[in-house]
Length: 428
Image 1 (cartoon, rainbow, N blue to C red):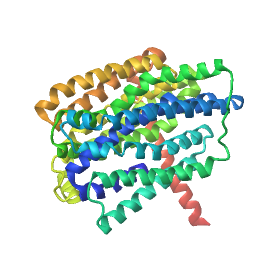
Image 2: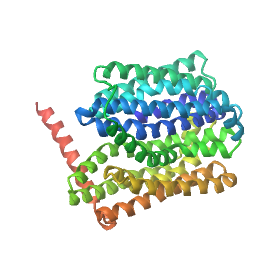
Image 3: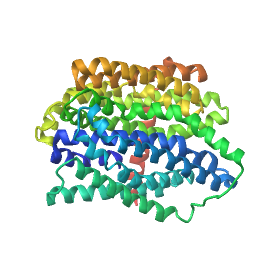
Image 4: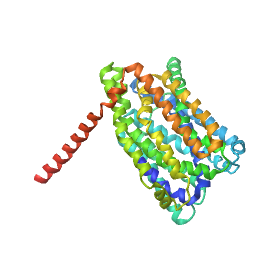
């Protein structure tokens, strides 16, 4: 669903053009960083403490309080300093976009909260419905705006974002309103434990969020042309296909790592990690080869009608970062093993190198310099997280290289199951 959602954005990217899209992408990157940090800092309390029934109301109250204070203060600060941000980035036209931050943030607030409630109850159907409402509303508004002629700039995109997020929030509230309960008072010691948990998560959440979206913000700050930012974000929209594959695997790997680690099943944990790296490499490497072999320049020209001419080369450059994904996924292994300090150390070092390369390369190479910084950050994070996980679990890269046999056997089993089912249906 998320991969198809990325394709939906091709329509407004063509409609409003690279410059307007660059301004919208910059604002969305800032907003995404804020909500990524808020999810880890505040809303994760719902899951980690709410699994105990007796603490669920207290956890919900604490999470809502911290989440509201954090998002409210960040949003107000950006709204207050919108003209200064526009002047700092040499993009005064960014100020009217940031003026709509409070509206968009309010629209997303309840949506993200109900998504965390869905995670607490392991309700994948509810999560799918909430996300589907968001994606469906966005798609309908984009189509209407395009064909009715009112979708013309970044301001229109902000209103579409607010409206679709608000609709998704309403759907989430209708699904989970009966399960949401608050506690007006509870022991201060429990409140302190929850706050300490959020503060401990804050560092890794901030660095991880910046690694996910900070490249667009940095590029917008270092170049004066918003169209360059728009071209870079267009390339990254396609690169997110690789991240979509990673996130799909993480849905299975992360809880499995957490369970095996908690049960001290070290041998099975080591095998799982080695298979994760090998399987991801087998999937991603051929796709990267196709990116370089196929005439993607013509595809981008056909899709965007020649408006994003820098995007194909940038996408090829970013694909080198995809090759590091099998290794950088060990970042989630550290999270699943509750190695918060190691996770923060790995991401903090990566952010420092990422920012340094950006400051040097972007003034010299523009968007390609930002692409190089992103590639470097993926590889640095991959190397650091592999080294840390290896010390904790004893994984072996030699064993990883031999796991391709398991992948082939997995494919064979799927084919046997598929053909066996087809044969049985035919016999019936």
